[in-house]
Image 1 (tube, rainbow, N blue to C red):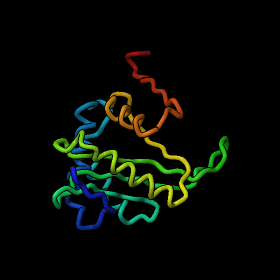
Image 2: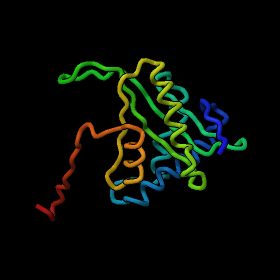
Image 3: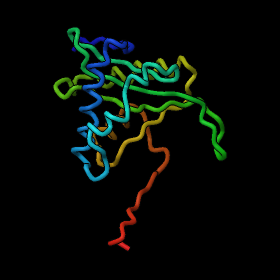
Image 4: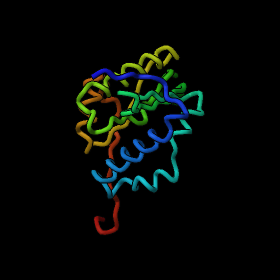
Length: 161
């Protein structure tokens, strides 16, 4: 598949907002007890903030003139009381329209944004993936991301105490 990977532009916002909605809807459908609805998230979060922030990057995948996927990242210096300072970035969203999945688009988006982040001096790349999303976990492992911290969770509901 011959796709074009390029920096997102304001003209892409309609498509990006639509895909962001689909991404959040997929999360809500997979785990409604934890995730807000896509409509609720849409009221609070807009991808346009990424385009306006110099510490954020958005790339889109385009096929036959249509935007079919995107990836967002932001970077900063990680300063912690326990670890050494390091330039780091997080992948916040990665999405490819369902009809274009399994064609290498996500890999192309990751390769391009990783190169851009390296150019900015980023040394470490992080991504947060929920346990239920095995496809995403497998994908990121294939991209070379490995377990870093185990973030564990326990519900403390009244009826379980």
